[in-house]
Image (cartoon, rainbow, N blue to C red; front, side, top):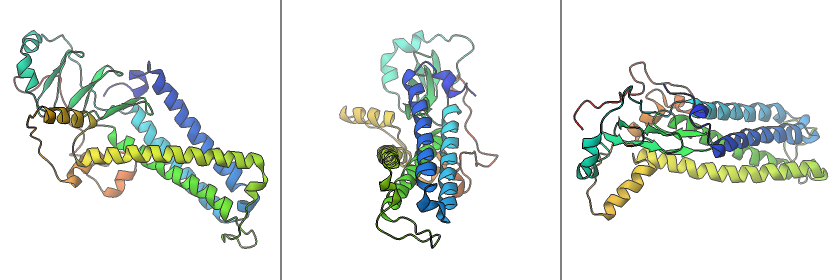
Length: 296
């Protein structure tokens, strides 16, 4: 496999900044939840305090695990040849190149190598990536064939953590815990409003949760649509241009469940929620060489 994500794209300052912002945002959210919400008098004497602390940190742990896998996993880099290959004949035949579809091997002029079907070149990583979706600065890596699962899991748990944080803040404001009956929530005014610092932290967390929640929800929806339609954003743009040029694009549709299993694995559906490879031993990622098995 290729090198780790930060090593491949370490020169991208935007990616490094987004990585730092991600960890700072998650750490700040956990700090506010524990210090300014759960460990306050309204929650301290309640059974809800350890319950929410465990559940929220479990979500955070899964979020960080998925993010780490997405960052350091090989997205599907096309291997480079050991020796240079002469593509002068192919470059001269421009008409032959323009008739290629997503099912054909192509030649990358930047990598100076053949690339398998549906592979595209990333200008930030400077490599071709199999079934490349896009380059995401939030993981400082490409989203491709081998790490799209972890990227979508990261989006899912980020959205879940944002929703959980919003729920805790609003619940604390509207229904403070009655300490005389642990586990029961009632009342109309909370102790949070009496502390300006605590209120400020909760407002910042609420705004952060809304912004990140909406942001990852939109991307998550786009990723799922991309999977079930079997078209990456790059391919959608390409097919749209071909359609405008009145060219027919032959694309065989697979069942949606089969497309989802190609990304998340062919094991049990419950395994789709964990950042691990749950496919059977006979499965696994396809292995490509830098040469096609037929004349291009």
